[in-house]
Picture 1 (tube, helix red, strand yellow):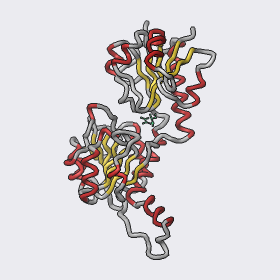
Picture 2 (cartoon, helix red, strand yellow; picture 1 turned 45 degrees about the vertical axis):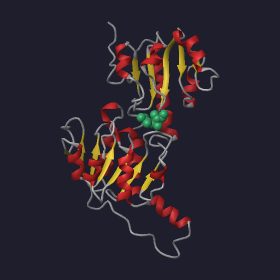
Picture 3 (cartoon, helix red, strand yellow; picture 1 turned 45 degrees about the horizontal axis):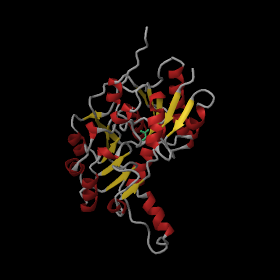
Picture 4 (tube, helix red, strand yellow; picture 1 turned 135 degrees about the vertical axis):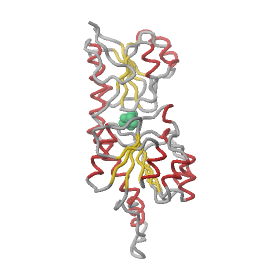
Length: 320
Ligand code: 8YV
């Protein structure tokens, strides 16, 4: 039977079009009075499509008493209160696996761009400096140890790629993983002390807030490079800016920020940063695959086959 679905924000075109003729789709984006829309349709909504910074909290769930499913566009779902959803019997899905390789590729690109100052070299050439003097020599990947904070699906894909560069790889996470050849550190501080390049690829949310603080940056040291392709909330941005200014670390490559799409001006003013507008998964190919997985989760749910990719907080137990 057709269900009523609410798209909380403008979604990928594949999601926008997918339910036509099958389910009734409502939209909050662009509504003149979103509150009034919610008051009217809230009680009929059985599924939500969300993504990015647009999340779902308990107050919103209060307005949706018949909600069954929250389908998140993205592997990270820190903006969705999944524990609260579970308490209310609401299932949350995300889009794992389909973006792993894309984000890992981007992370490796960001490592090289930051270390070898690729964007800075491009700007140097365009500014006409080359005929006057060669571009200043840069740091190198040679002889470097790389640390990965969060050896999950994406962390492992990054590690696999970097292995082929002939560098040593260390990691820190909630637990040691038996099936990897990399060196485990039981503290982030220990990892930061051991490596030159620290790649942040752990989940966001309250549990990991400001994990990378002034002490971790200090431990990374004056040759150190910080790369973040996870969530801005994992890094104390003010401490990072101070460390980059003072030369406590050498540079940073960031795809994510604390308050997107706003990037602190003093961070953007620094020459030892490479800053990207959260594009880790942002290829045509991968965004389409993510959108399809959102759609497939919703369709599977309403056909009574359960979710395809439920998150850990809301495990799926089919009724027998
Ligand atoms: C997206 C992401 O940029 O998957 C994630 O966790 O951060 C990205 O793939 C974001 O979810 C798009 O809305």
